[in-house]
Image (tube, rainbow, N blue to C red; front, side, top):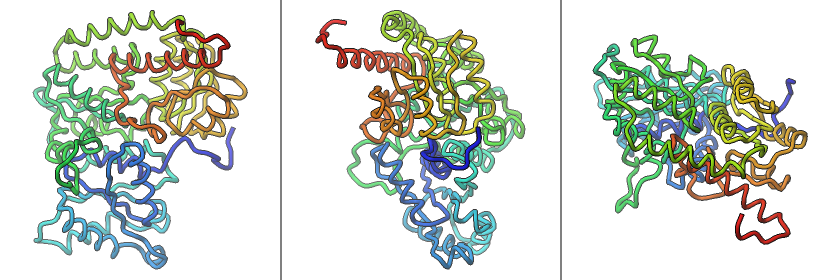
Length: 448
């Protein structure tokens, strides 16, 4: 049923996702073309999850700029960023305000480059990310695709690297993926990689732009890759970097689920075996065996429990697959975006596992999730910190995973992916169910 308003959205601003993606590119600074409030909101939101200092510049619209356009402000901002940060790349993302007045961002950047002809300036790219046309995850995909469009060169080569587009996962997940690719002994380009820029060490000296990230020069080589792997089943093709490279550079694309749970992880490792020509290394085979054993250990605690899950569409799909694998039922599934075929894929997944059909929302808000939870009931919430208020009102535990985690530390270190990440999630969910049973019981369980 359509509704006139969103009361408490499960998604966030489109430029937020773009800002996060650009943090994964080496020596890059992000500028939002709009008001200072937009940049402040993005910084505060990301800082509270990653617990790291994050700079996001703004073209600082005023009342006058909002009427006559922000070209002059943008040019001044580009000058300031170039001199203060000395970046290799400045990534400019539009906001609702600049898009609403029809400010032509690409025209302003073209004029700036003409004005600076013959002078050394950073590379500059622009992305269109008004929040009224998408969510944070769509902003993330758009940014990654624009990076590939702007920099990729050449044609696919069987001896080229493997492109990996992991989507919006944790820093720990990115580090894990790099270790997997190293174990397969395959050259790779991962876009983006904010595993160090958003969780670096204890620096002796301040770095205006944190070290780390995918090198800008590596982006050119995405066009000569032997193949691309992109985590995403319901990404709009126009926002898919792997699809763009397949169509324009002839790079074979594998669009696969986010590897959470045995089934989805099997798909990932099988895809890597095929694209690299290398058999599954022993360490991953052994971890898979431990995971299968752990499923049996946890079964009596989790079987039949009803979960209320929410988050980015592809994340929800993979978490749903995992929960069904361990014998849980889905009560409510809320996707924060409008992924292509999200509801159909979720229905197929539930039917394939002979599960109870949940209430499914696309582009949902937390008010819908709350009303559905009242109708269906549940034993556990699974998702980010934004669902805490609802879980508390129902006195049902919340397992905090995904993005954002604002009321706990370590959200950037949660391991979700692969057999190893699934083991962590299995323990996390099972122990929360056990803890709840203990706390609600009149008997002081010390052995359960």
